[in-house]
Figure 1 (cartoon, rainbow, N blue to C red):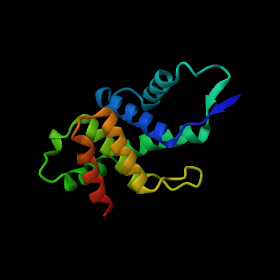
Figure 2: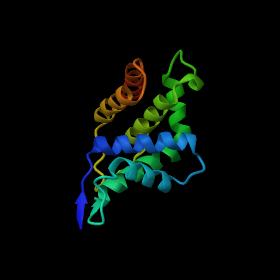
Figure 3: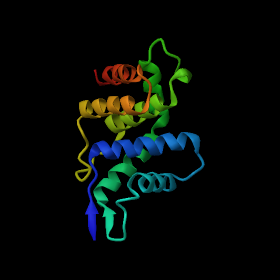
Length: 151
């Protein structure tokens, strides 16, 4: 059976979509949301002869679960570094991107198979997600918060 490989950028985009959906459907199991996102994004490529690489799927699932498991600690960091901006006023898309990036940078388990990306790469890709999925001012807002967390 052929195994499709996903780039880390694709994995982060899928994680974002899953986490964003979860904010609207908190009672739906994460595995169901992940399956929906994968099917929606890759329906043309999916066939009985094609499946995703186990390491890629494990990274995706670990990223989503790590973000959700550490949400309280992550939100405390966002509140700390989002000076002059009320937490409850942060756009849901921006909040999801921030949570995911902080989850990956600060809380992902160290595992030889997962090859955790350097934090600066995570920041750059979070900014790219904001450019694609949020408002015009969001990339600089996200970059500012994540850069301050790195310092």
